[in-house]
Amino acid sequence: MKKERPKNMDLTTIKLPVMGVASILHRISAVVIWVSLAYFLTILSISLGTEEGFNSIQSMLSNNFIAQFFTWGFLTAFGYYTMGGAKHLIQEFGYFETLEGGKTISQAAIALGILLSILFAIWIWS
Image (cartoon, rainbow, N blue to C red; front, side, top):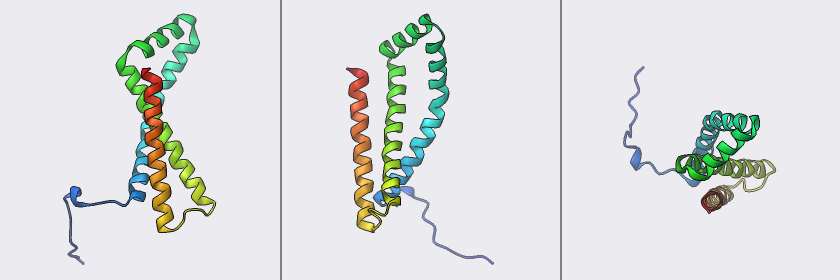
């Protein structure tokens, strides 16, 4: 049984609602966190091993732009993941469950994630 359904292969013409964008960003941030854990567990192990290890990690994080950028990316993903999790918890308690409420809380989660990203950048590079 073959069904002929319309197919839209041009993904640039699809406009997701803000709730969909928030959901996709939440999932992407979770993947970034899991991938980054290998890097950060290694850094944690080295820094807790010896005083020289701690000093070398501290020097790397204060002088190496790539390490700082990677740390900022991890913190940004973690900040947005936390905001997305808070959004889900608030909705689980029965708030913002309407379409308009969902849009509002999704916009707030994205805005707070951007704010945290800016604050993390200021903290790392100042």
